[in-house]
Length: 299
Image (cartoon, rainbow, N blue to C red; front, side, top):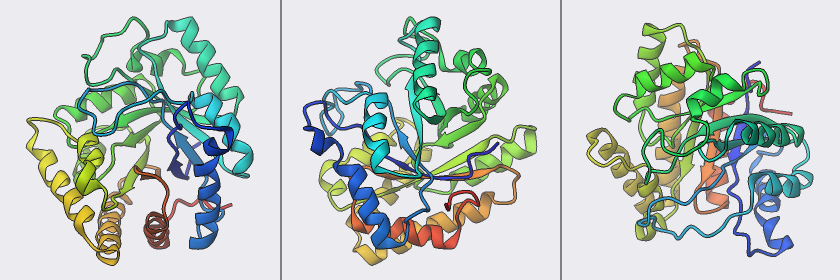
C-alpha cells in the first residue's frame, strides 16, 4: 500500500545535546504546525542516517544521535506521526543489517530507504550490503523499501529502473529546485511498467544559505550542467524577500505536481528545512499543501 503521506525531515541532533535540547525540533514542529494549519497533516517524520562526507561540507559534520535512538525519544512528542528513515547499508554485513532493520521496524518505522556510500567513496565500496542488493534481500522483511532518486544525475534512468527491478517500492527524490523530475517520470512511465511511489522533496531556503551554501553543496554534481539552473534557483530563493521566496517555491511545487499527477505514480510529499524549523518554512509548506496534498496525509 502506498504511504500517501506528507513527511517532514528531522535530522538527528549532535550527540552532545542535552535531553531537552534533543526534543527541541520535535516540539517546534508541533507548535509551528498548530500555528500554520498543518496540525494533523504531517503523517511521517523522515529521519536520515547521517554519515561523514566530504571535507568541504560547509557545516562541520559532528557525531549525530543514532536514528533509532532519536526516533524513540521524539515519537512521544509527535502523537499520530509515524516514522520513515534512511539506512546506510554498505558498512554492515547481511546478518548485521537484518538485525538493524528489524529493530527499526519494531520501533515503528514504516519505510526505510537504502542508501549507499558517501561521495568520498565509489559505488560498490564498503564491506557490507549494496543498497540495490538490500532492496532484494529484504523484500519479505521491509514492506516499504525506498531508493534515492536524483532526476538531474547522468544515467539516473537506468540506475533508478534497476532499483525498481530489485524491489524498490518508493523513490525519495533529492531536493527539487527545478521541474526536471517531470521529464524524468514522464520518460519512466513511457518506457517502463514501473510505478513506485514517489516522495517529491521540497526544501525551504533561508537567507543564511547566501552565506553558508549548505543546500548548494547538497545538490551539487560537478561537471553536470543540468544542476546549474537548480543552484541558481537556490541562490535566487536565498536572496529573495519572504513573500517572493514563498511564491517562487509554491510556483515550483505547482509545476511539479501538475506535471506528474497523471503519470500513474502514487505520490507523497517530503519537506525539508535544512537549517532548522522556522515559521517562514512552515508558511511555505502550508501554502503548498493548500494547493495539493496526498489523500492519506490528513488524520
